[in-house]
Image (tube, rainbow, N blue to C red; front, side, top):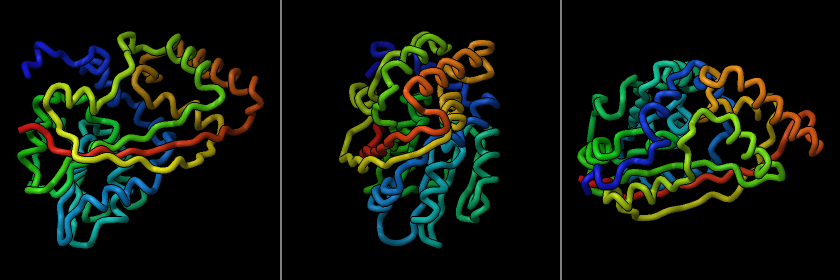
Length: 267
């Protein structure tokens, strides 16, 4: 499909994607809730028997790569690639980040040096920022026969404060183009991805301090502290006031679900 006839949504453009190289987002990213552990079982089920190489595309600070580390075998290799030097630095220094089976690379996925063939390519909260007509065919070329691309997500289920908090986000976000979207639908509608299967985890309860919860939002596009000032302080204050009005003074508890959708990228 001619991408000019079906342009990428403006809110997923490179001017917004580059925010993930901001120092403030890099520091805040550690406050995101973890992927449910069941995610790694789903991904392990997609691996063939015998030695395998995995590519984690847009690895960020290593949430997926480090979680997969416990599932892969001694003979496996995992290449973790991200364009943000700060994210890769954080990933390297986390527990397990120095595992010799992990090969970190700082590079845009569009031009990164790959070491195929890969039995599995994973993409977490990153693929939506990439140049789809470039990276999807790269993934297809790099996959072994029978290998798949797994698009991995984690989502906070609606909580008591969600609707009111969305209004606060909309008031302060610097991403003025944002529209709700479904990444898999965006890719399939362009003929760039063919779904082979999908699984969703059971909800996992996550408890987090108010400080950590507020900071987690600054790891998201449109809420980078480096770009919000002075609105960041107002966002923090309004979020805390909302939670306090519902009786949350020290911590919040909410549910998180993970999802894996796998299939074949376009050639």
